[in-house]
Image 1: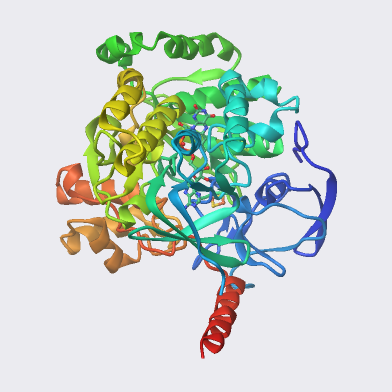
Image 2: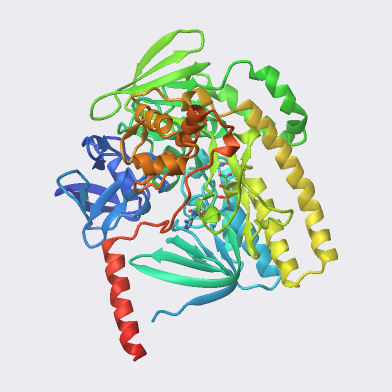
Length: 96
Length: 472
Ligand SMILES: Cc1cc2nc3c(=O)[nH]c(=O)nc-3n(C[C@H](O)[C@@H](O)[C@H](O)COP(=O)(O)OP(=O)(O)OC[C@H]3O[C@@H](n4cnc5c(N)ncnc54)[C@H](O)[C@@H]3O)c2cc1C
Ligand code: FES
């Protein structure tokens, strides 16, 4: 796993598909995924292929994930806060 | 019901163009609101500049980035009403901005609207570009600017253009150079670049900066004249295969493949309120029509910066300032003589920037060959449509434009609204129909431009119910 060369923000924990993951307060949620062993954020429809953050500037929607109490969002446009519960947007597991 | 805020001038985008315009308009006595989807001002080039100013990462990001700290600070001090984390969802004539902030939709009204929405990287479909681990160079750079993070290595970079060179330099300074640079810059550009040479010489500082990068790349494997690449892997990219124009092949194991083929303007908001797209041969992209004051046709609509035509950060600042002077002039806050005197030095700088960009456009053309993907390559990522399917549909339906192809195939109907497949589909329809680029348009942009989550819609519904009952 690659971590930040220059980590920003204080250490917090979030969950991804129920697993606890280390993150930095205020960083972009997509950055957390890009440090995981499995970097995928959603699967495509209809062929269910894995996709991961591609543009980091909100113009590809490959980084879509589901965040509790917020909804389905682009993880590159969302900052991290402690305790955030995140689920990958895997088809057909989730259709929101 | 929620109050609707008003200002003289509404600006979308707090990058170099939007910030420069805001400062100048305020000095002229206008009230200004600037909104931006990022949480900090600075735009793409100076993303997160203020927060990074005290971090060791500032050394890695370079001198042009450091210049941004001052620019962002002076913007924050200028007195504009700055609204971060705000995504424009819809624009209305006259002028209204509807935007999403948190779980709310809010509205702004103003007599003048300046769009300074910047650029995005040119999408280039190739086999395997949808695999996790394939990202744009700009994406990796955003990761560096916001999280001080490098993508998982080994990393290879494929493509062409100043941003790719700059990012590789930043990677090196951060202690993790890419394993290879697969350079798609076409052969023979030394000769061709002489055409742009005169222009470049007028902006020598910038050219020398470009040349000064080169020796820094010793140690990075540099494969020249790359004409074809594919990303290989099952659940993520595991290798990149490449072919150079001489016919030699190669393969490298990677965990990340970064791609960059230059920039195209983010024109969607402007086109939705009547700005006209014009094919710009030198940039192989559409630019937006404007007059000498950056007015885009409709009364009160102005466009500045890379969102209109790619010109770089310094050019964007100049255009932002000219647009603000244009607004002040229109408003009667400046006499024609004052407006002309104020813009005279700016116009001289603008002409030099344009000449310099002409040079870059010649040296780093988008490698169009790679935007003609083979039949199995996915072009529309959202709807998973391949180049073959789209070509078939285009020729069967005798398509003359992307909007027609959209109704046949759903290309461009997914959540990205054609921001990724727009240019590739334009190219594909153009080559199937055999029409000139300017005649084949792009997808018509349609609001809402920001995705509306269930919670936002629920909040809006509740609000309408409240509003209706208080009305009685
Ligand atoms: C990913 C990326 C990285 C880049 N990095 C560099 C670099 O390091 N060095 C360099 O010289 N050039 C860089 N550029 C080139 C860049 O275009 C600069 O030339 C410069 O930032 C352009 O200034 P601008 O003000 O026109 O637009 P930008 O700086 O792009 O600013 C536009 C702003 O508008 C906001 N915006 C856009 N649409 C909306 C909307 N619908 N709602 C709300 N806000 C919106 C964006 O969030 C952004 O902050 C980069 C470009 C990209 C795409
Ligand atoms: S990575 Fe492209 S929208 Fe988030």
